Image (cartoon, rainbow, N blue to C red; front, top):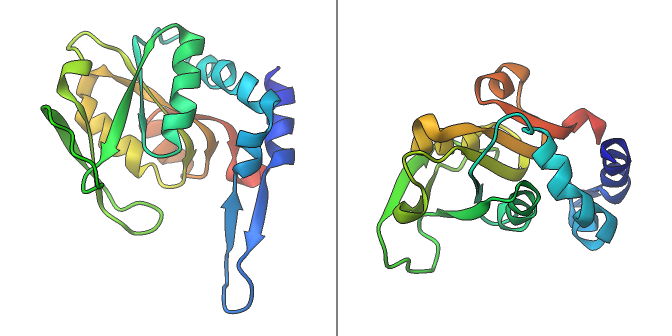
Amino acid sequence: MTDDLRDLLRTAFRWTDLGPGSDYLVSDRSGWWRDPRILDGLGDGLAGLFADSAPTVVVSPEVTGFMVGPLVARALGVGFVEAYRAGARRAIAEPMIWADVPSDHRGDVQRLGVRERLIGPDDRVLVVDDWAATGAQARGLRKLLGDRYLGTAVIVAECPPPVATELSIRSLLTGMDL
């Protein structure tokens, strides 16, 4: 199914031209969420990237990670924990653990946090997201999770190979595939 899933992901993806005055293309992943075959295969496909790691929980950063992470958690038979961005307009009225995220693909510095009570000292955490452009969020979550961090499973990895190796980022596709 993984080769079929990769083909479906490539077919449903497109680059969008913002028009005159813009010198870059924007990724349009909306076709991924519209295709039930992709949704059906994503959990198993991403979980399979870390099949030998025996995670006990999946953690994903908002926003798109909140869509992909539960699919992987379900495929692995484990729970899911949200990693929130600091400064969002929502109050979380319980203790959080936070980590600074280095500058991301937009040049923004962020903080990511998880509810402290949801990550135990013996957890083995798989981070899941849709895209890794620089590895910044994976780096921040690895810092937050410490020895509990197993690696990061993403649909697309664009970060340089040494960064992917350092952070154990595994992907279904690379940026060059698109």
